[in-house]
Length: 297
Image 1 (spheres, one colour):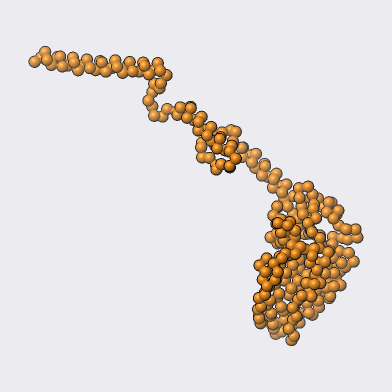
Image 2 (tube, helix red, strand yellow):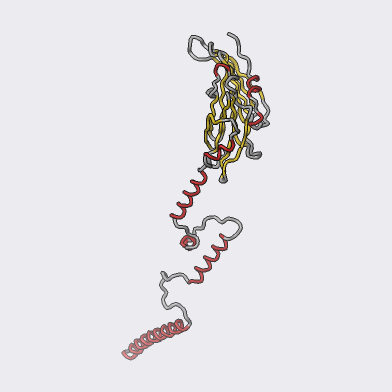
């Protein structure tokens, strides 16, 4: 019985020895073939896989179709694709400065006809390019003219000339002035607004709105308000013509001499042509003659 126990114990120990020799032989074969010695799971990914990922990313971004921003960490950290934040800020500042700047005042004088003077000059962006365009109200002996200049990177360009748009001082009646106080010009949200008043007790306020028509590049009339009113009794008609929608709305108000505001009497809705006219085709005298007749006292 003692002999058998010893044999079993030896046999068990022999198997352990054989297992250790086998492990050593396998390790030597692995090292000889160039394989990994360690089986640590935190070991870096083989270089070949990382290179293939970068190559695929460059091929995608170099295609004709713009690629969406990659979330690959290799592409984000690549010095070829990255731009220093300081460089980006400098570029944006220069671009904004160039886009918002306008040609010098000296070059504007080249567009002023001989004998005319600038009675008013306003600036504003008419075409959304962030440059300050210029609108000139010119005067000569009580006559008024309008020139619109567009600011470009190469200098001023004449966008429009409206020789018949502005009422002369004498043409505006008692409300007109030789200095052009009866004419008000402003730019609101890419729209050129020209307001004029004329008359005495029976007066007319005319408001024109122009913007740049993208297909033609012309400054065209998009809206027109012709509002006759009585300065004594407060009666008024508001005639609004929208050439973009083709609607014309006429509202008649009756004034209250004792105070308390005006009362809306009636409203009429008509249609107008949607054909957009360039600013140089507008004749203020024709527009004023189209004003509705005010009701009597």
